[in-house]
Length: 233
Image (cartoon, rainbow, N blue to C red; front, side, top):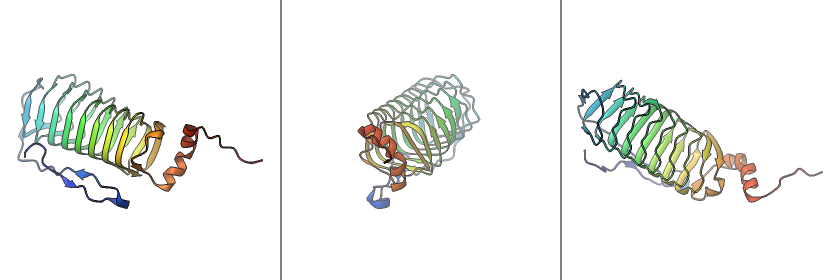
């Protein structure tokens, strides 16, 4: 598989909103990873990382192509500027994983249990994040294009200054989300099971929400606009 292989989707979506193009990851027969540890600028192609403890290891600048990472521990793992392409990541767990300024393209992230993940300045294209829970996800100034958050829980995710284009939230919970300075284009929030915006409600231009969500957000919107709402005497 080559880098940047196009994925599926990108159709009209619901209500005229252009849907995200989802990845189509078809992994080749994989060889088990046997090197014992990651290396900076390492090149990992067609490998299966199964139940590997990668805690504290340094894989900055590494390239993962056609790989499967299953049940791996990523506590304080350094993957700054890494490239993860055409890969499936399942059951990852860890706190403080550093993926800042990394590239994820044609990637499925399934049932992750992560906290304090650093993805600021990262580029995510044709990525599905399905299931699991991610606390304090840092996506400040990241670029997300054709990304789907599906059936997952995001606690206090920070999208400050990020750009989101053709991003969908489906059956997922957004708790205490920070949208400060964000730029949205064709972002579909209607499928979110919970939409709790802590900051940046004024940046929702370019997003589509449901009428029920609008009612839930009405107090926050009124406060943002300086409207005082009081019941009549």
